[in-house]
Image (spheres, rainbow, N blue to C red):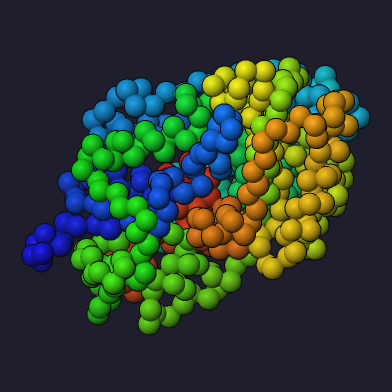
Length: 491
């Protein structure tokens, strides 16, 4: 391969959502892009499987900020709806409390405020004020924190950034999320409702800064959506687009080493073969990228030793029966939310009364389950894998989840489970190279932790970039897609 050809060749390590998005963006620039994926399928956590007639999205189940997906098609001169369609949800989620209270999180902010006022001791005005504050945090931070590199001087040399810096005190970084929410709301039901948003990036609302109260605005203002075909349709559509742009995907091709010399990327090693490249983008967890792929380099120990985000324990249940009271997204709250998070973060264990997230895609896509049945994605937040006795923890959690759902739905769940698959932190780590099975890289439990993630590049090695949930700006589909945008802007 000639040097001129190598200068236009890019290797992406990992076909997670950020890796695919980066490949698309660089292919649009006219570069020759190849993606090397250890698994036999694309998507990373954003994949699917079928068991006995039940289809399950294996990982992420909430779709917000679809504009970041649409943007990839438009960059390529394509019409997004020719590849990928989605429906906006009128009901974002249904919430269930032990005392029988049921609360609908309407997409319409006015209806949401009325709903909370009707079902709790808080007022609609308190909800309106809270959402206004959430928007204020977004307005101050999004264009610098979410959409640009924090590690390049050019990001700060404009009026918009200066205005954000001058308003820094307004992003509420010096209180915890729970402290801020307790100042807004009297009722523990409402506080739990808004504290739950900390779990969207794997953090603890009793430690994480109130800056994370930006998240309700992202959901309420931009909306929540259901993709036709389920969440995996996002992966399928983007892979199709990438392939049309000439991106080559190599599956079951584990990258063993990133090759560099004299501070410059030279390519990667795959199964003893050297693949030349002028640039390499690692969509692999930054912890594994350094520990496994980069040899002879000084490790950024401070970043690699940061506290990891929480993980998940997921039961995929094929349920023989239907539940009219349930929707696409459902939450069954713990009575003592602080105790639950203490178990996760201090004891590195699972509380006996965990908050349960229940997703049922067959509510919107009937073919995801046999007639008269539902496909239940049942998830609880759990600690990252640090060698716990997971077999015992899983058995106990399963029993507690079934008891809780049966009690709160007033129907015995156990005999309805016709199909069961389980995903735990150990498998999340082994299947997706997410260190300790963490879902979002590092946690945001420190006051400025969200601002201290690994950059999307490394100054020591020219041509090496980092994408995905373990680096800036963070985990989850929208932020992973934005990591690809940041690389594109600085490529």
